[in-house]
Amino acid sequence: MRFRQRRLFFAIMVSGLLPLSAYAQEVIPQDRPPKPSFWQAAAGVVAVNWVTWGYNWYIQRWPWARVDLKSWGLNLRQGVAWDDDAYRDNQFLHPYHGSLYHNSARASGFGFWGSVPFVAAGSASWEFFGENIIASANDLINTTLGGVALGEVTFRLSRVLGGGGGVRHSSFGRQVGAFALSPIASAQGLLNPQRGSQNGAAVSAEQPAVLALGQRSSHPFLELSVPFGNPFVEGPLAPYDAFDFRLLISPGDGELIQRVEISGLLARSVSGSPGSRVAVGVYQHYGYENLDDFKFGGQSVSAALMFQRALGSRSWLNLSTHAEGILLGGISSDQGFYWRRDYDLGPGVGTRIGAAWVRDGREWLRFDGRLWWLHSVHGSDGNHLASSLRLAASLPLMSGIGAGGDMTVTTRHSVYPDGPAVTRRVQQLRAYLTWAP
Image 1 (tube, rainbow, N blue to C red):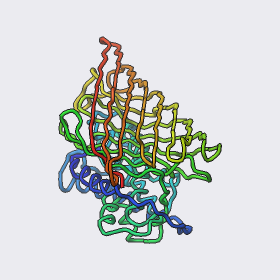
Image 2 (image 1 turned 135 degrees about the vertical axis):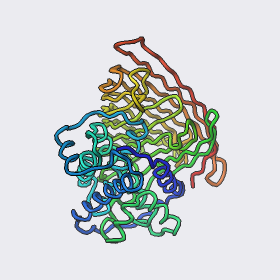
Image 3 (image 1 turned 60 degrees about the vertical axis):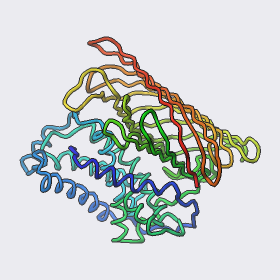
Image 4 (image 1 turned 30 degrees about the horizontal axis):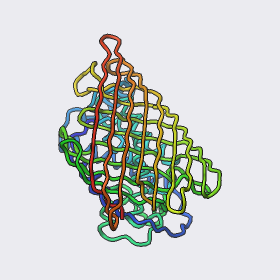
């Protein structure tokens, strides 16, 4: 998809996410939702594609948006290929587009897994019928998998803000935020207020959302972190009843949204006592990092081993390790540039580790490490080994206000078949104030 309306997408997403710094944790018992509506969900998918295509053709008059029976037949005969669109188009805007499909199905009463076919169908119908160019293989993957992750998170958080999912009270401002987060789900809710209004119930979190305002290098930044749910609670958990969401907004090189990270728990088994628990789980990850000197993002799944132990009555130690499979990732490259593509695409493997000291419901100290290897199948045909280490500390001051700082070191070592190997290192030091209501 060739998006030109980037500022519109960014403004919608940012305006909806900022109110989450004060999202409610209170929940109420849920009733069984009405039966899902296939036609309502499908109509939402068609509407998303029709509005997008109508804007591209009738307003922007982009040549690639001129479609007819002939272009449809040609697209179906040609199959799929890798495309050379810009990094933010492929790695962020396509998942955002897919999140609208997912939200349509969720708001129509479908669960997490039942919504996935609607995302895949919406992506395929756009690629083959919304443009007159060959369908993109990477768009099909990113729109579907990234759309599911981003869609589930925005749907659940919009339910929290808008009064669905069991939250007792919702002001007008929160309703506006819910609409900005998930416009298609809000529109579906007007058609049928009961269906989907309690689908994706809020789960009480041990830690509040945190909004950080500070300075990184020469740029100011605003970062929102939302820890949703708890993977160590007893009883069954549905997919994404526990997830971590992080959004970084900062001006730099013409970009606004510079990082989006999602880790959603799909399934888990937990054992142990209330003071010491071990959990084994499966996670879905979506990542988008578009900093000044480093790009990396993609779709992955991981098997996780997690440990939580009480350190007295007020503190907890959380440890985790993941074995990760990268289904499709994009990473900065030094060779193989073409048109707007300055990155490589391909699958890979990796690992994640994390450790956090939590006191009185807030993280005081945290360490994160990640190592991943990616083999390029489109671009330079190189192999990339990258690592990221981050150490963060935060000190509460008063009334939810705190001060913090972190240091991150990211290294990329790339080996190319037709050129010398390249090693690049990016260091970043940040200081900020935090608000955690």
